[in-house]
Length: 165
Image (cartoon, rainbow, N blue to C red; front, side, top):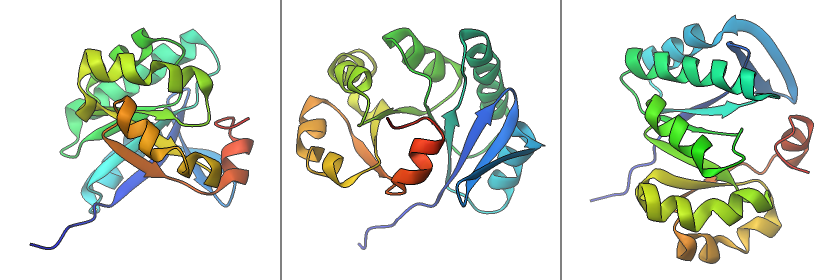
């Protein structure tokens, strides 16, 4: 049997609004849930949600949006972004995300990888690869417990949106 590739729609979430990260220019013209439903209804196999919160309060609001999306969508949600501790990973999973991604370029995220995989199961933990240097560490990430790698090589966009130093 041939391997199938899945099409995941990626979107940022900031203060309950969808942040389309196209051409490096974020635009917040559409409510997050509206965009999530559009992705669900137009053939996406999964929804990749980048939590762009800048505070714990905003993070909680975004968690609420993920929770509501999880209730309404037929497709799985993969969430990540605002992760400072293991508790943040748990919040995404409890909100309805099927899995969580950690940023390979963030030392805090890499430090959480093994503990997160041990606690929640490796199938729940993915790594977001945003640069060629991180690609060299893929075997290490698998060994530490990541089950999948999500590849986004647009480093300039990732830097502008705060996902990469």
